[in-house]
Image 1 (cartoon, rainbow, N blue to C red):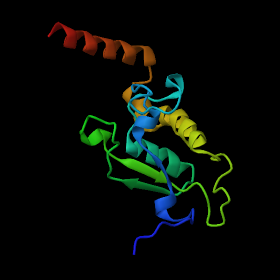
Image 2: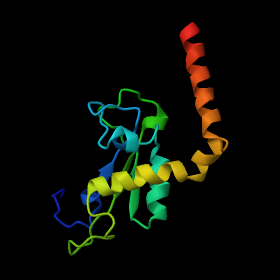
Image 3: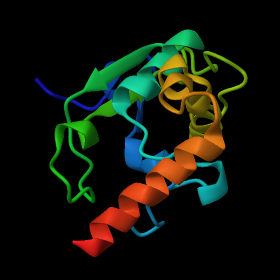
Image 4: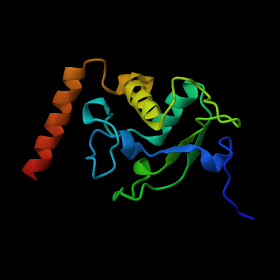
Length: 141
């Protein structure tokens, strides 16, 4: 019997984070929930999971699509669920008192992940030039 539970420790009651919530490439209408300057460029579910697991939070990854995500690509799939509260209603971690706290933390930590720092090759100016070059080529076609 599927009945709604009020127990914050139940998986159905975990907070959801879709990568779109913290994607700097998205507009508010497309689902971004934090300021663009604090958001991350195209975050993935795996990155969100890694950051939160490292923070010691109870994390679940589900193979779900964000309804406002038009791109059905695998890299845009996924939803991360996080346990914010214990069974008695108290917070699991004081630094994560709200959804926004979690989003800001994840957006701050993803750029520091090894997978992110290695891709840019250390020099951020170089990686930005590379991206600009790619965009220029697309326009010429």
